[in-house]
Length: 249
Image 1 (tube, rainbow, N blue to C red):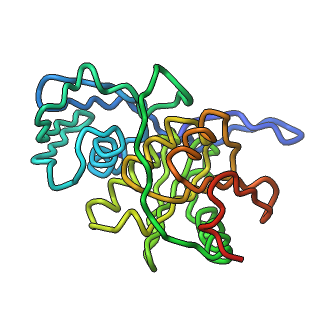
Image 2: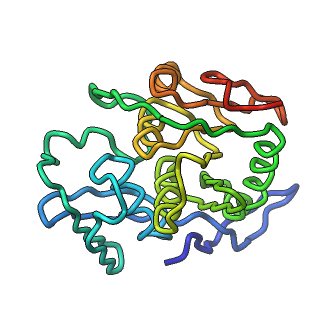
């Protein structure tokens, strides 16, 4: 399924004319987990296997990609089988990867990111510059977010209409490739609320940087979870809001 569609539009540039315009494609995707729990998402219909893996890890439904026993995708329907053990999915799945940020219910969170990974500011700036270069669908439509995950010399970038799902997709892609999350960092184009911080804390990513603002709930979780939260405010200017010891100058 394509991320974009071509549609007819009227353009005004001093005078009106008929044009073919590119718009981003968002579709309803249904995911069923172990045949007894179903969620629906309005997302871009690309990289669905990576999304499934990243969603399951980021929601805390499994601690390892190796515990995902099967993923089958047929058009807009995903079926995933995981080893839930004693996990009660109906009671404990409280954070959703969708277009709504912040706290959607009371979240009990105690996890800490245990990583001594450090990042040079030049490598951070380079990753952000590359993220902008990779945002081809955004350049064509203005309708997507983009996330990038950096591990050693590897860079994964994926776009989606949802900022949460873009992050799910790069987490999933990195997990499939067996990247070490404790030595990785994320750059992306969305806000940084609590549920985003919880997502990356669950997989153990120590650094996240965005060109959008943090929220107070995100700041609190990042501080508690020992995540380094960075916000680009103007051009190459950035603020390090929490745990600045991981960034070297």
